[in-house]
Image (cartoon, rainbow, N blue to C red; front, side, top):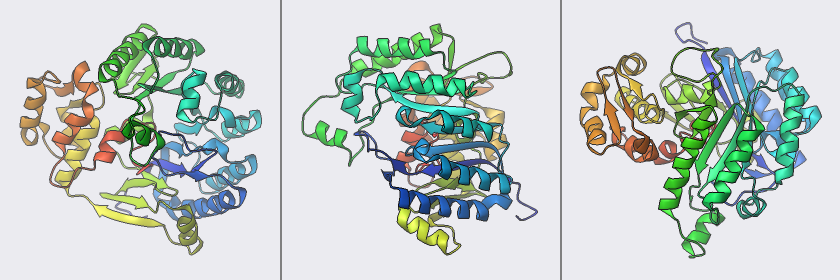
Length: 411
């Protein structure tokens, strides 16, 4: 590591394997198989070897795919390699889990090595909707997995939920929210269904099998915000809600995802694994979205980069502005200047005024932030703030998903 470069403090690892492809998912993933998974683990450890000298992670996020699909032995190999390479000890270490793939032994192993946050892909607690989405777990598995994680010592658990699912009524959504909140998790991530091309759900929509009800989706979003707030969750980003136990000061609730906040505040991140994207030393680096080719490159001792893009300072500042507006706190002008070297009040004055005129933004002497209605349209507003290079709309749209921006392009 060059003496002039400070270590990268966030690490994202993409695990591309899934037991089955969900009907709404457009992220890079592939069916699991022991041979390919073992080759992937070899390659990942090789990539960790290459980046370890420049990474001292305070946050780690294993996303997917389904990281919990890796076997106990595969996880042990990864964790032992991280120990050898001095990559353990992060303040926040998240692993995404599918409720159908959480065993007591696996949960204990992860906890023993320092994983201290789990993000569980629940999506729905309605059996019919789980089938509709192509999920392989049942509602009973959700509760059993949650209890296993608590028994293993995890005291920071996120539940992923989806709304505006085809066939989902307001009553079903309210029931799901009530049941999820009653479980007592520290964090909720709640996403509106996005119809991505090349997914079964998109094809069904195009074929006229169902219609999108925007008014219902808006009502569900409002119900989410009100219900979460009444239950003690603070919304700190478009799709993310966390409890606050008074242990931290400032604008963020105690259990906010520090890893994702680093993305939204323009921080650097090293991305490992097929399709992972990182931002290091002013460059956006994307890995090959092909596990076989990824493994082949790492077997040769080389990073498996698909592209390396040097962003201009202005383009980087515009992108950072766009992501940060997803947070309820928006951008304090002094913080934006500190992060980017640019003044939001001069370079983006017209965009801020456009949002204010639309009823979507509020500007004060200290900061600019979106209104409740504006947060609903944060993706649209974000595109106004992009500068000088083509808008990476896939990044903007997914910036709020768990562990997503860098890793799945990224928790």
